[in-house]
Image (cartoon, rainbow, N blue to C red):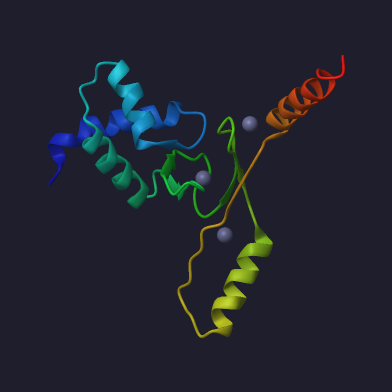
Length: 143
Ligand SMILES: [Zn+2]
Ligand SMILES: [Zn+2]
Ligand SMILES: [Zn+2]
């Protein structure tokens, strides 16, 4: 039905694959606009939703409630560690979470249960940068 939008969706998929971490529709749209693709924000939203629905992209909510997307290299169910400063994303398995989610759902009589568990934090590089900054700040006043 949406055949005429196929090239746009393909272009959005490429842009998503080029992004280094999770990105919002606005961020992706800004990049596509710089490339003069003429793809509108609404089309980017639709393409991302379609890619997420077909399993070609992962989606999650940022702590601020914004929908973020990523073309993940891992197929199938997995979890993410995401740096909230630089966006670095690590795909992780979480076997403990799988067992816990399955058991908890079963205990309450739930079947066909799914879950979304992603960890937001500061990556090692950003942590080191922040600590260096704090160190500098702590030393400055007395000197
Ligand atoms: Zn992923
Ligand atoms: Zn980082
Ligand atoms: Zn899981």
